[in-house]
Image (cartoon, rainbow, N blue to C red; front, side, top):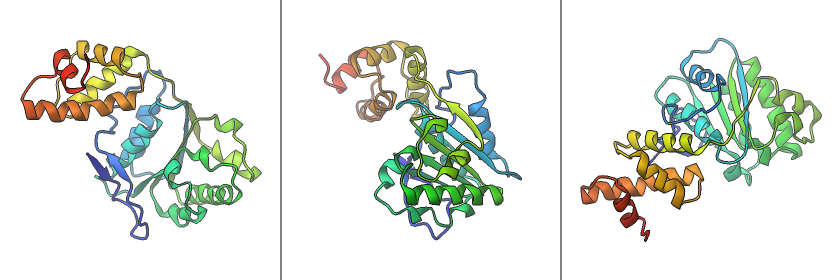
Length: 240
């Protein structure tokens, strides 16, 4: 099930669906960084100064989850936020970013897919400046280190690293198991460590896909009124 980030100025017609279980509570941070607490504060405070964060790392490190968690939280507050998945919006014109400095928090996912395009680079440069001048905040993600990105508008390079830069790393299996259990609990589902271990052994270790299996298990558990055990998982997912 998904929810939309509704707390946006009325001129934006984007209706980006957000998974409702993408929350701070279901995120696993395996590092010693203060990233999670920093982003929680960003989502909770009435900010008197601008904040900028750049999160980078390979696929499946939780970057998208964190941006969606910010917007899911702010959907229940008086602040305006929007989530922009650039892989889905790459065919749009760069003018999509017009007037977004009015938002309290702007979350741009996979910004690197548009970096290097002259129009997008120019729009991002001016937008970051305007957000900063208006005491608004922006969180961007990419698969590459922002200190190493190639841009067509040179001044943008310095703007991308105006704020804090965090690298996210892939989770080890123990942390993935914990993440599965947290997502299961959020759905009201009891999933044992044994079931998590089975899923990790029998399916690709892409956490987003593993989490996706929970929806099917949750649905069938309700229909069949059965607990989620290894035999039940085998039956539902057609595993011999």
